[in-house]
Image (cartoon, rainbow, N blue to C red; front, top):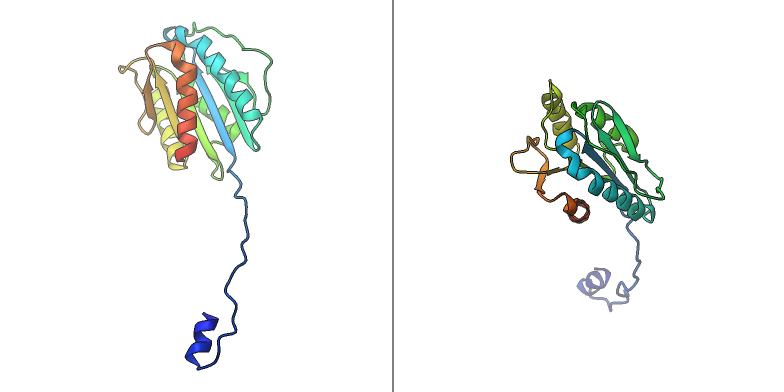
Length: 196
């Protein structure tokens, strides 16, 4: 522009072209992944695969800066399988024989551990459940999922069949074979991080 201005004024251009390059690394946003596994009796086939997936996620994110994962089971109570920032030495086994699912407390617990409602990070909640809850758990849970999605958190729901009572706003993955759970979680999280 300076050379053009000099030419327009009838002067010999003395301005030098811009030749300086500066490279900057753009840091990847922090990553938070929460996994919640329903441990009611109907979900018993998924316990082993979800436990394996939780261990793999914890190990994979341990090498990433600002990445945290946490996995919990939920029945009458919410129990941790993996903790944010900790890499378990082995798979934490659990069983599914519950008759009640406290879904709302589960979402709140994962939010407390990972900040799923807070913007500024890539946030993913993976739910493994048939969605058959008692009382107001489904209606109250839907309010939480709607708020999560509105805040920018991606919700992935892994269901054992297309008759599962999933919640709107979640990306549903139908998985009739529990053994494929680990691969499904890994694929869903990887695809989500690429598109979020």
